[in-house]
Image (cartoon, rainbow, N blue to C red):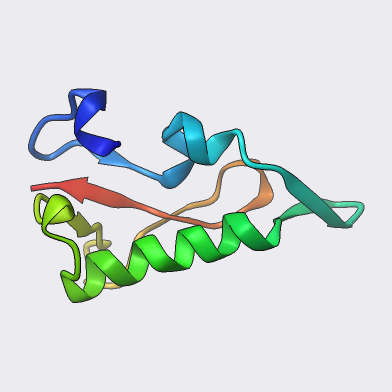
Length: 88
């Protein structure tokens, strides 16, 4: 649960920063990088959709972080591309 992490307004995070999500399994597709397993990918898409369309009141204090040019921000750590979210 996001609020239990004691994040403050302006703090940014990815789903990998949440222990439950981080501990979900990976499936290696290519020897050079890991691709999220099906459940992990579905959870990430569902969370992103909830944030974008404001579907869940519990997430009303979270928005999708954007770059200076206004495009969605991504973390490129560990040869992956993770959406960055921000506490508002």
